[in-house]
Length: 87
Image (cartoon, rainbow, N blue to C red; front, side):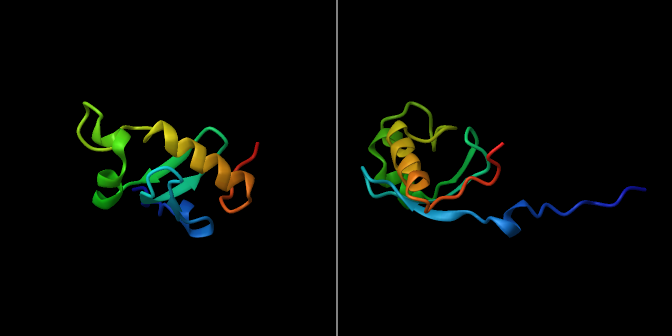
């Protein structure tokens, strides 16, 4: 019988709040690698984002909105959002 493994990836580098520079939506983010970003939207953030509101898909799209990427890049460049694995 195998033991269940606890997912502890967020223990060392938890998700952190991010405010979009364009619409002021506030959500939680985590940059695991340069190419992988986890986003946790809440109802208020979805409502604040005009791009998500105009999307034909209900709820947040997989990658979020294109303008949020600029905010993410700015936070990384300023050192306020850490990339967990830089390899």
